[in-house]
Length: 214
Image 1 (cartoon, rainbow, N blue to C red):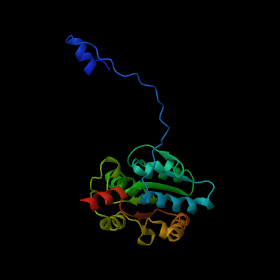
Image 2 (cartoon, one colour; image 1 turned 60 degrees about the vertical axis):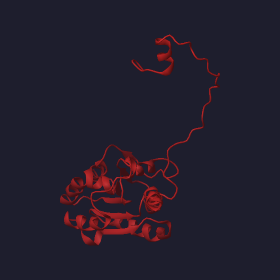
Image 3 (cartoon, rainbow, N blue to C red; image 1 turned 90 degrees about the horizontal axis):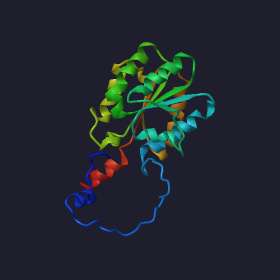
Image 4 (cartoon, rainbow, N blue to C red; image 1 turned 180 degrees about the vertical axis):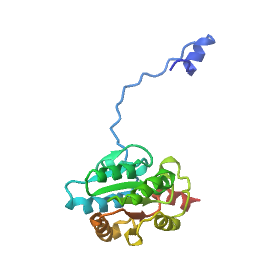
């Protein structure tokens, strides 16, 4: 880069002899695509969502920016589109308004508080037929595990406050032991013609590891 200084450039500038290093072979490391952490709750959430959608060959799953965006990659292949923070619910609403069903918006808890809430209010005001999955891992994992604005216990009252019918708010545990129960809950909300929210809760595995070491 222009203006960049390296040890070799500095040595040359002050008249020191050039250092001769060992010749190195050009090595191409094997490809390692990004993936969810081992034990990540999002993996269990996507597993349940994929199974619930098997009955719907034509569907759309929109996503936001976060660790869960990796659900677009193998082995999950669970989401079709991602644009920016907060866009998942707005995109889902647009797809539903032109007749595509079912439509699922996937968003993290911290992103929901940051920029997803206003789009959900809009969906409620128009009674839009979408299902929102809030992946609640109780942290902002992608940017360093910062705390979320509100704890998990406060999320359900917020959803009720913006107008989501209480019977269409489901709080589930994102774990493989709850897989079948979660699949059935998602199927039930996909069949509902209106806005519904499923909160899949389990703490970020990396945040949990750090907390145990502290």
